[in-house]
Length: 504
Ligand code: HEM
Image (cartoon, rainbow, N blue to C red; front, side, top):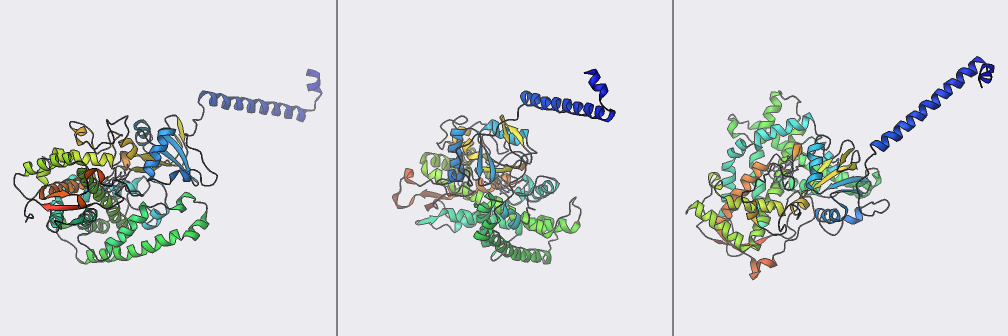
């Protein structure tokens, strides 16, 4: 062997050693990677139901509201489940431990929202709060909206707006014949948001905002097949979104112009639009804002606050009608606390502990945003499963709110379960997250609670309520509508009998 090697010409000898070294290197690297795979193997993808070519699991998502279907599937496939919705990976999380991994352990990685066409167009290229990417711009805009409209201090400052609108509802409530309560509550909720964010009602504004809400909370096939551009041409999806955006933009521009023309000298009288315009003009924000950013944030107040608040109130009234003994207890509390007063004020609400539990229980059973939408920036591991990079992560808040592992007799409406409980609205206990949790938590929960508590207390104080046509409580239809907000499928109609002369 030695001879043979010496006999080889010098360059060939060098090449031989080079190849030998290379072979050794590659071998050792291969065995290194085999070793590291054995030591820390890549986690498997989460399980899921059977799927079809092309459409993936889409066929599993028909027939019932999505959160209910996902809850049923999770009962079979587990608390971390992977669905292929068209071309998109969707990871569904349905337990406290799995939600904790997403919201707490991988908080920064999972703090983005899914990329959807409607938000890119209608929410001004995602420059609002709800759809903007996690980062300095999102942080700045969320802080501004909290400080200027949604903080406890600001919410208190809107007491007169709430009281005036609730009083208006009470004095104009038709009595003795069936009234569409769902519609009345939607009007109440949007009037309060309108006055606090843009000051007064503008012709044509609310209908456009309602259309945007429907578009944003609806399902768009285009988002499930992002590489099939022809679907957009066939369905006309983005051109429809652009038509809505142009209508919205026109009316937003008018509102801005009117605010600029009627500048308020007293900051206490400013609405959110006034504040945002002033801040823009002063130019001392870390990231300068544009008119489009202002429009996007104003839109968010409507998208985030209107349907959610109205839906909670409509479900609270539905559950009270289904459970007359709970209604009686809540009415006794309100009427005894108010001691003959006909008008509830912010200060009275603090004493209504049972009414607060009624709202808490409503938010558990009828979580208005049942699926918390997140996106994983990079791949990560949740409960031993790999969450693929770029996948959508959906936390099923509704399913956790009804899971017998966390709640006794979960399907019953039983407000007393919260007596002495530490469960809060800050997402501390992940089996109860009606306002979400973590960095993306709802900034409007104090604003919403103030409206809901006052409105419900006033409704129970002023009127006795009856189902129309002699309907028995157990006959009231409690089905949910399909959509991102879990509202009633059928509007709630009730008959109001005044208990007091309408409050003056
Ligand atoms: C009962 C009433 C309400 C409910 C149940 C509710 C629920 C939620 C939920 C579940 C989220 C997502 C949280 C997450 O991903 O962790 C959210 C986000 C948001 N909500 Fe609310 N909300 C309500 C009222 C309001 C109100 C009154 C406003 C404003 C006026 C508002 C503005 C927002 C905004 C701007 C976001 C986006 C936050 C972000 O992405 O950082 N919400 N809300």
